[in-house]
Amino acid sequence: MKLQKELQRADVSDAARSRIALALPVLKGILLALQRDRVSRLGGYEKITLADLAREYREGSGDCGICFEYAVHDSLLAKDPNIHALLSNVLNDFCTIKSGAESILFGAEKSGGISLIDTSDSLLNDDSRILSGKVGQPTKLKKQWDTIKKALRDTKARDRLPTSIKGLWKADLFLGNSSEGKWVGSTLKLNKSDFQGAAGLRLGIYPETKKGESPSRDDKNNLILCPLPYDANFMEVFYSSFFAVKQFLLADAKVPRPVALPNSADRFLAQQFEDRREFTVLEIIEYMYPLGQPDLTTESVIGASSGDASVPLDAVAPVPRSAA
Image (tube, rainbow, N blue to C red; front, side, top):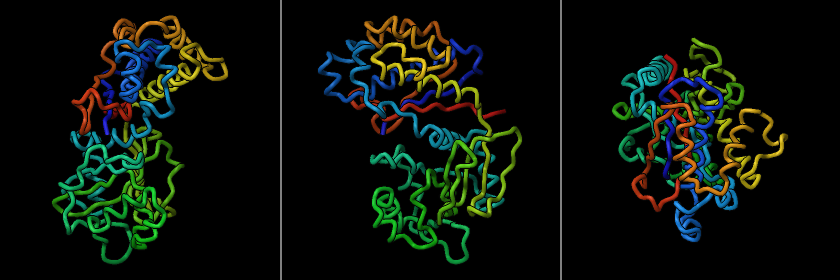
């Protein structure tokens, strides 16, 4: 999988300029998500106009569906001082995992492709176990790993999982520590009320709804709820920009009807793009860049094919700064 990350560097300070700053990388992500044969047919990326992109756009191109999962995973890989410390403390206090949080990104496999960053081989060994919060000997995770992955798309594979981890295929991340060989299945939701328990899931991670929320037990779903601090304003503007670009492309690179795009700031953004619909996407990105909020994000491309320009992007992921 190949992912374009947009890492927040500054606070959102201007509604119109921040939308432009975030919409341009979305456009770029959708452009680079086009299949190579369609790019060649149009003469290469540098020849594709905004009108062309609207005709070629397919649902899911440049999707940002895994952004929250990746943001948490990335924060743990980078040992973000807020996120890593918080989740390490939760694992220590609630799960007897004492050596610091590590992460295996599992949710990206739900797309049918390989995992975004395949960490499982290096972090799992034959003695690694999954802690489900149930009485009894924890299940060996590596022994069940292939079945868990198959269970994402195969109901028969779900039936082959041990009772204590029957719902573990619903996990987005596995959090734990490789030196201790202990892991917990973690589910991530943008809304705290959306959590549903499943056998094998232990952590429920969500963006905090009020500053200073503390981890707590959800006995009904057998989950430990863990609120994470993050910049909600940045995420709100990113999603607004993402959906504005999507509606604009679905409207043939023209300002959509008000019912499809009612927000005035979004319509202003769409009008800026419509005025340039016959220009190439790369030109638009270059010349509209000064109109956006300066230094709002830093872009990077990661994944096994990050250095291969011929491999299309699978997703665009906003990575907000954690709250101080």
